[in-house]
Image 1 (tube, rainbow, N blue to C red):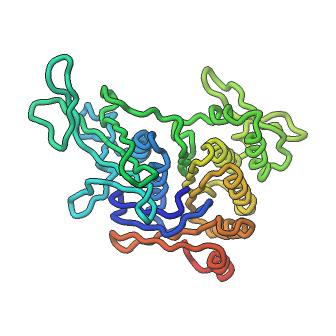
Image 2 (image 1 turned 120 degrees about the vertical axis):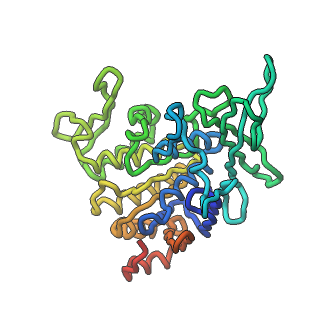
Image 3 (image 1 turned 90 degrees about the vertical axis):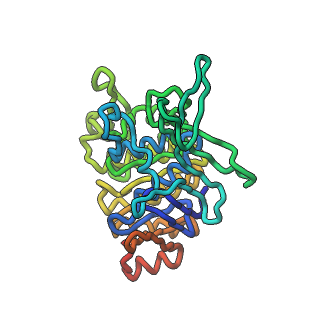
Length: 357
């Protein structure tokens, strides 16, 4: 679990330090202060050998494709991952704790083949003239002993390339965007298959009961040739599509499923966690998040713009001392900073209605 965070050379962040993270952390701040970018950085760091697939998805989510040539329609613009200032960009993006330990580094170079069959793979900062070179993204993770770099993963900018590219599943990090999992191409039914008939299924149903106390169970049924949808059994009513119970119910399903499927020791990140949720449900939602994160050994980092969400977070944190941390991001020109609040400071903020959003 990351107990602090430092991000350098990544997107808008030249150098951002967050002195403290909790088991459950809520990130607040005005628009365009980097809340989503912070989630993306932690997502890459926690994804391990799947960091490159996560990086590609980050670029796809923001429609950051190369558009200079017709053949580039499916290529993401790798340089968008790196900090730019005054017409120059960082060579390396680095994500670690504030002491510099457990660092993940990202950088780019070129790769090409030389010679006749059998050809040899070459790579470097500048390919020779006349070769068919491809841009590649490289990630490396510092080993736990701190003695050097132990893992290197490579992903080509060209998705049709012949070099190794990690698959997307199996990561110990999950990022739920504000637009929901469907926009990510993730099938809720597949996540449900991972939890059905387990204790984690009961956790999901418990979460949904915050909105619908008479909910008895959830099943996935076929709703087309290849699509399955969630059906809810509510006491005294015939089964009905879960989506008909409102946006809040569906958002809560995504939050609960993401939390219980990320895996022991994993990291679950939620952008605008309270999207679609009525303020009266938020204390119970946060209580469930705190309890489940502790039980399953999951670190949770979420963002919000809502004061009701901040108050609910503080109330839930009262029963989990030292586990809840509020992080406020702020910006002055091109410089970003942070302030952290926990325990008594967090209580004072909400009691005195001190504006931190």
